[in-house]
Length: 307
Image 1 (tube, helix red, strand yellow):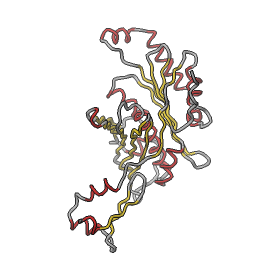
Image 2 (tube, helix red, strand yellow):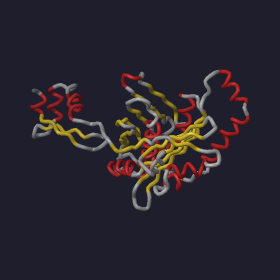
Image 3 (cartoon, one colour):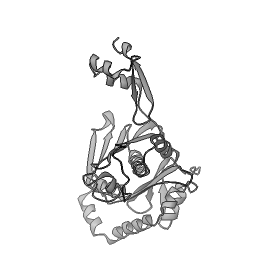
Image 4 (tube, one colour):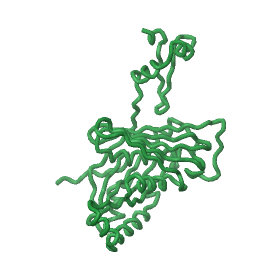
C-alpha cells in the first residue's frame, strides 16, 4: 500500500479514533481564506470572524454525501448585519469556498471585546442551510448565539440537529506577514444503532472515559499548532491521539470559487420592469452589477436586455 501524501493546508481531513466510537475532522485554510479576506478589505474584527465562518463552512461542507451547497450564515443586530460563507462540491471529492460580510462602514466602531457575541449583538443567530438538489430535501437549521464564540455555536448546532456529543475548536488569525489563516478540529461521539445500545452507552463507564480522554487531548492542541502550515494535518492528529490510535481518510481539497455568472445575473434582471432597468442604467446605457462574493463586475447593455 502506498503512503498517503501529507496534507498541510486548504483541505479537510476526516479521521476516526481506533477502537472508540469517535470520529472527527480537521481543516486548515491558508491561501483560500487569505484571498477572500484580502479581497473584501474588512475591519480586522470582522475579517477575523468571517474567517472563522469560512472554516466552519469548509468543515461542515466536506461532510456532504452528494453534490450540493452548504451555507453558514451569522446574522446580528449590532454593527454587522451578517457574515456568510458557503462550500460547494466541485467533483472528485473537492470543494470551493466563498464568503462575504455586510456591514455599514459609516456606523462601524470596533468593539471593546473581539468576540462573535459582541460583534453580532444580543439577538445574533446562526443559520446552516444544506441544499443537495434532487438527492435530499433542503435543510435549514438555526441556533441562537448564546455563547461567546463560533465554536460554542457549532457545538450547540450539532447537539440540536444531530443529538451527538461534539467538541469543536475554531481559530483564525492574521500572521506577521499580513496573511490570514484559519483552522478547526472537531470530534463527535457516534450514536448507537438501537435503543438498547444507546442505553448501554450511557451506562458504560469505559465509553464515557474514552470520550472524556478524547476531549482532553483535543483541548490540548494550541492555536499555533492548528495554524502551523509546516505541520501536516496527519502529524498533528498523531501528536494528539497516537496513544490510542488514529485512522485518517481521504482529504477533501478546497479552493476559492464563485458561482456568479452573466446568465444568472440576466435572470435577476429579467425580474425588473423596463422602467426599473432604465433607472438602473448609466448615461451610456449600461447596467453594472457587482458580485458581493468575488467583487467581479458584470456589465449589461440596456438595449440588449429588451431583445
